[in-house]
Amino acid sequence: MSRINYKSMILTASQFLLYLLFIPALSSAADTLSVNQSLSGNQTLVSLNGNFEMGFFRPGNSSNFYIGIWFNKTIVTNERVVWVANRDSPVSDSFTSILKIIDGNLVLLNESNSLVWSTYMNSTATAVSATLLDDGNLVLRYGSGSSLSIWQSFDHPTHTFMPGMKLLYNKRTNTSQVLTSWRNAEDPGMGLFSLELDHNNKQFLIKWNRSVVYWTSGSWNDGDKLFRVEPEMRLNYIYNFSYVDNENESYFTYSLYNPSIISRFIIDIPGQVKQLSWLDSTREWNLFWPQPRDLCDVYGGCLIAFKPSSKNDWNLGSFSSGCVRKTEVNCSITIEKPTFLLSYVNKSFLSAFLENEAQQLDESACRCSCLHDCVCNAYTFISSKCQHWNRENLNKISLGFVSNDSYLEKSQFHIKVASKDLPYLTENSCKYNKDVNRGAVVGSIAVVVFVLCVILFMVRRRKTMILVGKTTMEGSLMA
Ligand SMILES: *[C@@H]1O[C@H](CO)[C@@H](O)[C@H](O)[C@H]1NC(C)=O
Ligand SMILES: *[C@@H]1O[C@H](CO)[C@@H](O)[C@H](O)[C@H]1NC(C)=O
Ligand SMILES: *[C@@H]1O[C@H](CO)[C@@H](O)[C@H](O)[C@H]1NC(C)=O
Ligand SMILES: *[C@@H]1O[C@H](CO)[C@@H](O)[C@H](O)[C@H]1NC(C)=O
Ligand SMILES: *[C@@H]1O[C@H](CO)[C@@H](O)[C@H](O)[C@H]1NC(C)=O
Ligand SMILES: *[C@@H]1O[C@H](CO)[C@@H](O)[C@H](O)[C@H]1NC(C)=O
Ligand SMILES: *[C@@H]1O[C@H](CO)[C@@H](O)[C@H](O)[C@H]1NC(C)=O
Ligand SMILES: *[C@@H]1O[C@H](CO)[C@@H](O)[C@H](O)[C@H]1NC(C)=O
Ligand SMILES: *[C@@H]1O[C@H](CO)[C@@H](O)[C@H](O)[C@H]1NC(C)=O
Ligand SMILES: *[C@@H]1O[C@H](CO)[C@@H](O)[C@H](O)[C@H]1NC(C)=O
Ligand SMILES: *[C@@H]1O[C@H](CO)[C@@H](O)[C@H](O)[C@H]1NC(C)=O
Ligand SMILES: *[C@@H]1O[C@H](CO)[C@@H](O)[C@H](O)[C@H]1NC(C)=O
Image 1: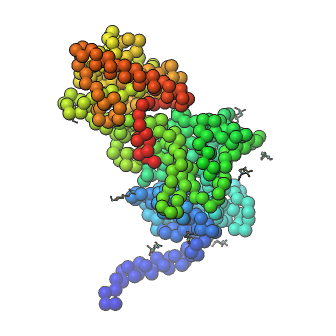
Image 2: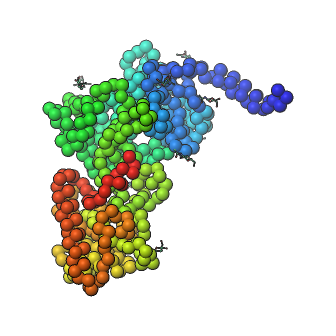
């Protein structure tokens, strides 16, 4: 007792006084925040049966705080969050920021008492309480006893589709509710990928930047209760999807056949929808399926032999800044034998950007001429004509991705990569115009790969497609 820190005691005492004066204590494990109460620091609301918890959280090592709702019973910090209020407007200190009801809205004030987030209702009826329900829904009500909600978090989804939530199209306002991926593991802000309802075709879509559709579930068949293209989305018998269509709205909703399962249906950071279930035995999330199955089928995802250009992005699972070769290939590096990766690009793109005059060569000679040309980064061999791509920037072509056009409008594009980064076609020595036989073999392998690709493409019946003939190792990396 000889070395009392008076300064901190005074501070603590005054803080406590402040607390008593202005912030009525939130009883521990309350599920409701009433008008005149506030939530800050590590205080949380806990739903009645303890299923969900709500309060400030920090994603990963981020220095920012967000108001979120998370599964109480799972442990992996980021992967328990199902909803984020201020996803694009974080606060930097949870203890001096407060969440409270002001003028009928639930609002978040930052350390300088500025409004950073609100439920933004103009309703004349003012909310007086916010309750966290056991299904993870946060509802604002006129009174704590009232059952009528005037705002609910289920109507403002972030990246998780919860049982009982509607993913809807509002026919009166012509607006869709959209799930949007996080930017990265440390930033729950609006990412580039979104899951929405296509009410004309009763299906889910994933879009890039709210514009480019690169995946569809296929239309919902009410009779079989299956999606035409992706039946496995329900074949695990965990999700009981249903589709509702009336004069006001169309929507998908679902329930869990076994309500005691803790499951997440999310649009993940790299642009895949995933269904995961929590396994108590291993205390981790078990991935049932990602869609699209392959990360390379995600718009802007990286082709095999490529990696995201920003290391940070890679670690955080986001590919927004484009892709670069895993191993550089240029003439100063002779150890890494280069070879070619078959991809596809938009035909009009090619005609606008190919570098040299088309040459009449056979395919193996074309291939070899690019291989031996230090500045050649890729070649095309179309209608017996050989052309080189000498630019380094392969991001510009979205690395093989071609948006909604049909297969026939696409062209083969052979990108120079290090052979060690490809699990196939490893033998590729090429002696320009000298070893014709070998060249012919390599050429015919390329044709076989190409034919396989066409077949694979037909089988997959995808509207969009990126790369073929690769392993699934890329896809599983982010799982
Ligand atoms: C909230 O505080 C205001 C002003 O102090 C008071 O008039 C009002 O009755 C309080 N409301 C509740 C529900 O306690
Ligand atoms: C909540 O924050 C206070 C003040 O920093 C701290 O003393 C307390 O241990 C925290 N409680 C929990 C459960 O983390
Ligand atoms: C979280 O769940 C556990 C297990 O059901 C429960 O014991 C605990 O009280 C819950 N946490 C909170 C803060 O309610
Ligand atoms: C946070 O940083 C530490 C140290 O740099 C690192 O070990 C840890 O994996 C990081 N955690 C997350 C969630 O990124
Ligand atoms: C609080 O939010 C306001 C408005 O967004 C911003 O100008 C201010 O810098 C923030 N204060 C702090 C301490 O972050
Ligand atoms: C609230 O009113 C403002 C101004 O009248 C309007 O711009 C805004 O769209 C309204 N918000 C909602 C949610 O209706
Ligand atoms: C919504 O779309 C329908 C059909 O395209 C159109 O008739 C209607 O006027 C639109 N309503 C609004 C509010 O934009
Ligand atoms: C997304 O689209 C908007 C316009 O709708 C555009 O301004 C923005 O640059 C696009 N983002 C990217 C990463 O291309
Ligand atoms: C599946 O959902 C529908 C619509 O909500 C419901 O009528 C049906 O009983 C559910 N089936 C099961 C087995 O839970
Ligand atoms: C559509 O909205 C109107 C007006 O809010 C309501 O009266 C009607 O019952 C709604 N229809 C359905 C099928 O929910
Ligand atoms: C070739 O690779 C080396 C090593 O990464 C690099 O320093 C050099 O700039 C590259 N040359 C060209 C022309 O890209
Ligand atoms: C094909 O590429 C050209 C040139 O980049 C672009 O203008 C066009 O929109 C692309 N077409 C499709 C269907 O992506």
